[in-house]
Length: 220
Image (tube, rainbow, N blue to C red; front, top):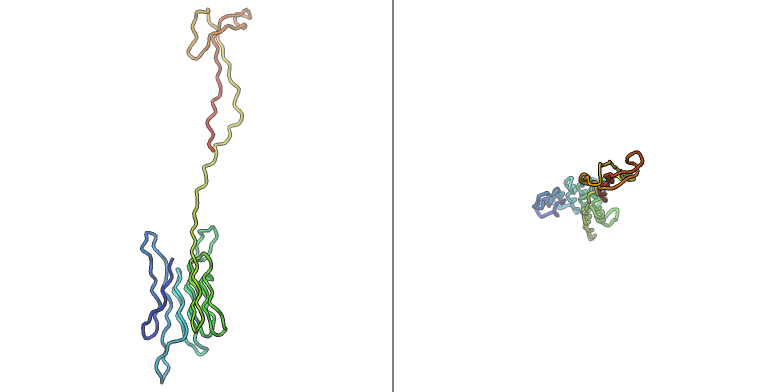
């Protein structure tokens, strides 16, 4: 997200800077900076107001400086935009406010830096940390403040849920059937043997096998 550029000479006055967007697939978001116009002062020449326009924010243009009967005022910072990339809604990319002679102008959406001012005397403030917001402007001997770095959030997908535990395995099954003689073959998978239960307890030849539960593999 990008704010507007600083003002440039363009009589009468200084026009607000144009928002410049990066050439990227996602595109950028920004707005123009506020202007610092010239005002007539009859019968003398026009004069430039000793204030600055606000920087553009991602959600709105910066305010222009102005002159009223109460004095000369700078421009507020342009609005930022609300995002929830950290999991909590917060404003980002607010514009920094311009220098003001007779007020303290505020940065955009509470995250842009406030401008320096002469009356009341106040220093410019930096953009809120990790919001990509502009710093407040300086003037009249007062220094401007720094813009803030942005923030990058890296998210990882949640792991797949583990396969439910099937519980204890069933006991193996034992199966047995009789055969007519020792020479009679058992089916595939069966084992030839002799058992006492055959022939009403007198014993005889049998085929036996065990069937065991084959549990599915567990996924962590």
